[in-house]
Length: 126
Image 1: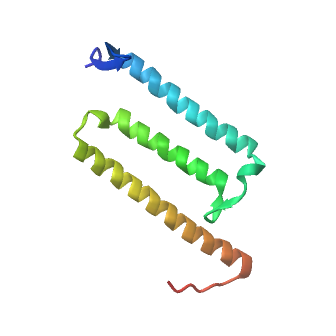
Image 2 (image 1 turned 30 degrees about the vertical axis):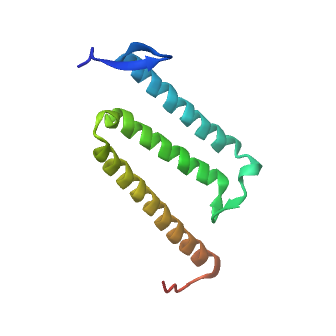
């Protein structure tokens, strides 16, 4: 399997894409996204410090870039691109749902903890 090649089409020409090329492509893509995250984390631009849906825009960018990286890792390293459409949807949609649910829980609990530290004991009824 190490010498297996993937068929790729570039500008109408049929070419074979080796696994080595795929690995380098994945490495470059994930490196670029990670560098963007690190640079934004170090610089923290003032324009991204405004609140959007209860959280700073910069935090939303971090969440979105993390989801993009997780999706791409699933797509490439778990070989989802080669699976049937139904299996791809089940795996990806389940992961997206769980990530969104985790974000919701973190925002709810984080807001509660912030309110407790800010003004003492608070009782919330949902």
